[in-house]
Structure formats: C-alpha cells, structure tokens
Length: 267
Image: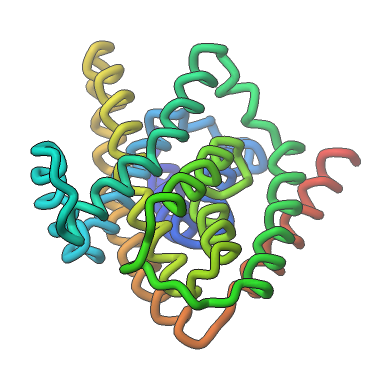
C-alpha cells in the first residue's frame, strides 16, 4: 500500500478515535469517497493499536492500577480501587465481545460498511449525544464507577459495532445520561477502549500471522506507529478542551457530516 495512503489512515484514525465522531466510519469513508483502495480491517485494527498505545501512555496511572488490580481479581478479591476498576472494565467489555463475535459468525461485518448507514448513524447518534450532554447532571466521577453502571456502559459500547455510531461517542452518551461529568465520561470511554481494542488486535493479529502476509504486517506496523503519534496529541488536546468546552462542536460536525453523506447517498 502506498505510504501516502498509510499516512492518511494514521492521521484519520489518530485524530478521530478519541473524538465522539466515529473513527471507524471515517476509515470506511476514506476509500469510499476518494476512490482509494480499501485498506481493509487489518490496517484499520493496526491503526487502533496505535491509539491503544496512546491511551495506555496517557492514562498510565489508571492502567497500572487496573493491571495490578486484575491480579487481585484473579485471586477472587476486588477489595482495592484498582481491582474494582479491572472488574468493571472486564464486565463492560463482555457485551461488545459477544456482539462482535455474533456479527463475525453471521458474516455481517462487511455488510455494515455502507455510506448510507454511516450517514444515518452519524446524524442520529450525534443528536443523541447532544441530548445526553445537555441533560447530564454531571454529579458522578469516574473514581466512583459502580458495577451496574459498568454493565449499562458495556451495553452502550456494543452498539458502536455499527459504523458511524462512534465507540467513544456512544460511551460518552451513556455516561452523560448516567450523570458523569464531561471529562470523566471521556475518561471512562478511553479506559473502556483498552480491553476492547486489545482483544480485536489479538484476533486479527493471529489471522495475519497465520496468513504469513509480510507486506501487510509491515504496512500495519507503519500505520500503528504513525497513529500513536497523532492520537497522543489529539487525546491531550481533547481532554484539555473538555475542561471548558461541551460536546456541542462535535455534534454540529456529526450533523453536517451525516446530512452530507445522506445527500451523497440518495442523490
């Protein structure tokens, strides 16, 4: 794959992954609207690995606490903040794993990569984000994340397997409906992305290894490295902006993009 295409994929993924505007939709739209070759799911997942590394680095204290807590969890003890965080992340990941496996077994993954579908989901779930953001009370913090909330956010996250919904956007939407502050809703969304992305990366990485496609593996490594750099910068900027700015600018972008895609699809 040309280096220019790999750079574009990395920039698109790095900038859009942490914004509630659906990185997967933008990765699908890149070849669909430009006429470029579809980079495929393996390159898409490689880009997500880059963002995964960025999240782990940015939230390294939470990740370290959850990693140590996971060891206590395996011993049957959820008696520390880290262990509870690990438990909640595991619980929140189960619905999306089950839904993803179902879609893959039914062969529906490629069928969802539709510009028309992305147009509708971008528009509808953008408006849902606005409703949640404006009505959310902002009384809960991520440190007080409870098990029932983890279950609900896990169910919200599973909906994001539909391109255009936005994994970060739908989790933030659910968290705002539950009363989390804007910054803590984004924080939970980022932390929940770690196990989800890790599982996807391991599965597709195994497929690449079995296929023995060295060129594809090399392209994936380039995309992952470039995405890491752009994602880390985008994440730092977004978390800083959330101290003073609502999610409305992202909603406006989603509405405009969704409307434009629907005009393009039905014209």
